[in-house]
Image (spheres, rainbow, N blue to C red):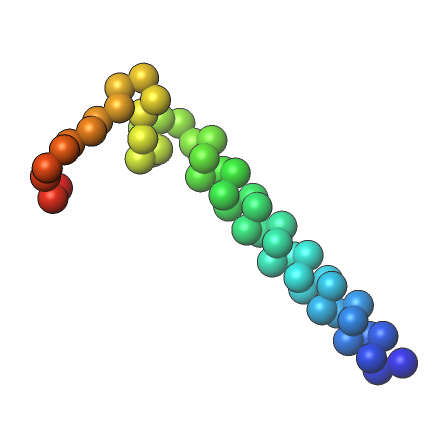
Length: 51
């Protein structure tokens, strides 16, 4: 019985971690353009600079 409880517990914790990760990635990718690091309409490409 202990191993079954361990499996169920690890599945539950893994599901929570995966859900939190997916929610974080999706929300970071769908934020308004003011908070987003990139702009599709006006890409900035700086060749030969370190900044």
